[in-house]
Amino acid sequence: MAEIKYITLEDIEEINKELVKKYGGTIGFLSKSNLEFTLAKMKTAEGIYKKAAILMHGINTGHVFIDANKRTAFDAALIFLRINGINFKVDIEEAEEVLVKMAKPKGMALKEVEEWIKRHCD
Image (tube, rainbow, N blue to C red; front, top):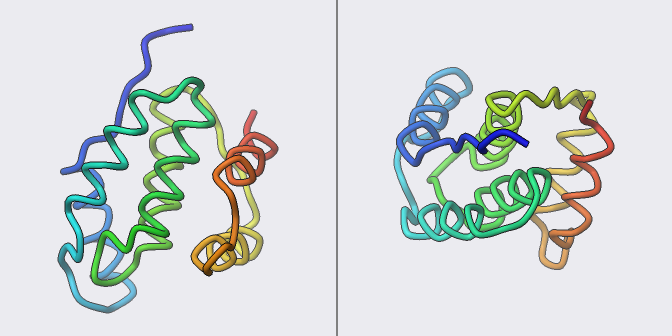
């Protein structure tokens, strides 16, 4: 497999800014360190789907931003997979349900998120 390309903290911050501008809310970090931790954990993980799951789960459950964590988590994982040549296709209503479930206490384990992502990629 080709070398994995990673999305940067700055890329994710920009995604969040654009989503907040589009949908409303407050721009800014709530916990930049949670995002830094997520990105570091992602790089040490084995497998592209696990890396995408760590990214999505970490942003969504880590309350990285003041607003738009779910949308940012989804878009960051989508872009990460896309820059690595993987097409992630999922119905928006299903994605919303999964992201809401994931954000709840004891909502979804990382392995469940990884399997869900994998099922929707080609």
